[in-house]
Image 1 (cartoon, rainbow, N blue to C red):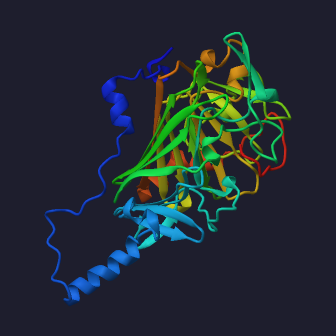
Image 2: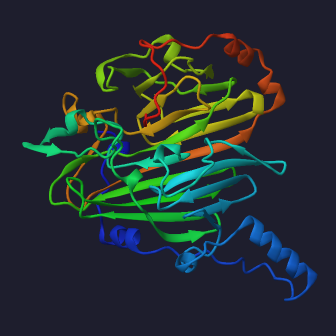
Image 3: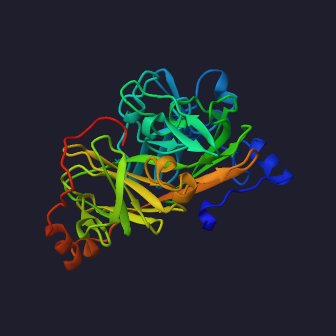
Length: 396
């Protein structure tokens, strides 16, 4: 088992650190505020109200910086000179918008969630966490440790359980600062997965850093897996570079049927146009690094994760695609050898697992955008999948 897939065994120090709230955001002591009632103070107050609105209601004391209310859902906003991130704790801890700040305008990096509501479909979010497993589980059950483990369906529109339950839960804000927020989720009464989790979002210049942690608080060991599910903006010029050595071909139910070497059209060794046909497969042998290029917007995104797999979902005709860094393929628990042989981590009670993800946005140089290499890549036609299919609005 690789280091990336090893469990993080708790120590007294790490256990206490993970459960103690972080310090709340504080004002910069080096900054001297203008005198109360002065024109400068009034201008500053208007600016703060515009860029850092505060969450109304009893949660204000918990999130004093960078929060915004949107309809009947309270969202936390993180803003710096490069990025804006809106997070909805009660909507699976998901992201409602992730934008690049460019010359006074906001350009979507993830597909923007235009209408935020407590009743919305979570698949309308811009991104959400995947835990304690990713994607579908065949028949809603698997064998582990000599016992049958049953997983209940969690979506009326899905025949199989999908993506665990973290993306459907109401997370709590443990701490928040101007450029960082930490959410926590207590599922210690869950069945069969009983766990506690933490999800941290942090802005660092042009980088969004995410960490996802889980602790098994159940009475039995189980295979755990983590990932994130971003819906990235897509236009006709969007290209992807994400080298992988293999992939799991799937059947009509989107469950894997066999593992094959990645075909040339889907190796994505260099920036390559997204396939025009449906792709909904787990890719293996990934280096943990990928890049997305929006040539028309002269924008690029570098993705890093300490995972060995990703799921690519490209519904035809949509303004988004999904690139999901995950640590295991679809239905890993039912593949030969079980989840532990396919990237999942078996956690005994009290053991923990953590994954890290980063998304760095950059403005492309005009000369690089017009290079012969990029022109050649643009001229190639989209790859055809092993099977066609029309777009599905379900989760990838």
